[in-house]
Length: 616
Image 1 (tube, one colour):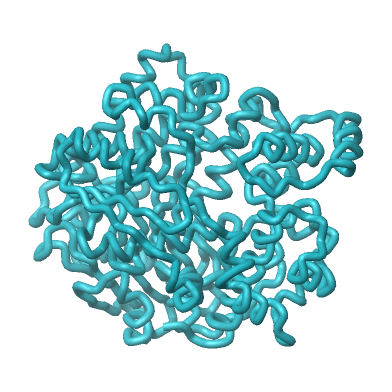
Image 2 (tube, rainbow, N blue to C red):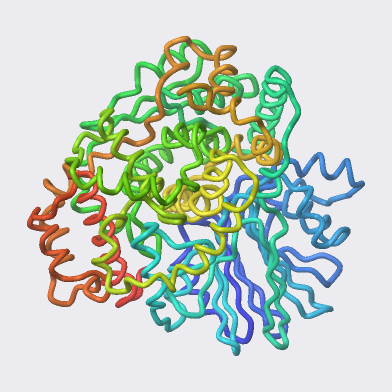
């Protein structure tokens, strides 16, 4: 796991790059220059400490800087008759690229963002993994090109302008869509994509080399038992690869859920006295007793860590600034604290990320398995809209009434509005308070939504496909990448192995949602491995007391940022609406009020702490 940066027609300031990315690669830093290309690498040593030094060059032609891990690289050497001088996956990757070019990507099981400079052809090749676990951003103004693992590195190296339309997306999603960023001339290379840059002309060609939609269009004919066995075998192989491909001890995050429980139970077969870490927080559900059942069953070296949010008032700005862009997901807070504590025990840790997205673990997927809410007739929407106007808002997030209210809200919306409401649900219902109230800036999102909505997929497959494309990389994976790497901690996700990423989307909907049971196939599999009390535990994730933060210990700082005379949000949301929200004078659920205020607060922290100054 590392940090990378590079440029064309622009001399890298290595001090700035190092200062910006040192947390990603504290063990070793090195840079090289060839022609008009600069490359810089910061290393967190996990595999082959001596032989894996970067930048790495072969045949006096190809030079690579690589962030991530290729878990199946030793098998690839055997399968493709590749002879290496080291045991480094970087060398495997570079030789595989030399042999197959772009096609090498199809063979990789791993998380990666890398750059390869071809000294002969004068081209720069950039690529990201299927799901987008490892980030890669680039700046291109036609005269110079700059890329980096993090936005803050680009911001600290160049003078950037804000992209106003992209900021407007943020109020619908809480993050930035696909390749969008808050800056002009800066884009994120999409997950499952590669770019080829002509280093003489700076012409950039970008293509998708992997798309989850292709696999959702396929329909597996496997029976439930066949699917169960394949899922088990793929997961076991994914766990094994992610343990054996490390020269450091590998631990596990262990919650009281089935995802981390499955990973832990399998990992214990490949690691003697596996280290497991469970974290509990003040004022939220404590999963420690459930986690301890798994630890006791498999004899792991277990650590319970209790974390308080007492220091949040002092840490919140730093945590939000780590993302380099406005980021609304309040679970970034506990993710930061978990990573900070875990680093005291291990440098490499397995997690259950991806299970919910691939096997339908979210409660909002249940209604879509019964009815395609993206196709509600107009006459029914009109009736539901009238009904909603007479119903009170729900202030109990997990109540049956709230669930009923959300279902009606979904059915009332149109097209992409249904998706926004089913997902982030930030400004939906109050869009008329946005200054940019026309939807022209949403054209790219609407176009992509319509493409999936017009397909013959079921309602469940549609929303899962949309979530993977829209949320997974820029929200969920970005959250964990930044949280872990801010502490020089590497997180590995067995559920996101190549085989499961390509098999799970093809499964029958009933294997994922059975009645009201989410992740049905994983719950069935869990019966083989886990103590009975864990099997039917509901999806919890980090249960954030956001209402309490907004109305309690963070109230003053949130108010100071949002209501400041120089507040940036005035360019996007009507001042009266924001003031009424702060004064609690809007007819709105307290959960949604807190979510909007947190979204605006995160924007203000980015604007004042990142955009107006360099953040290092």
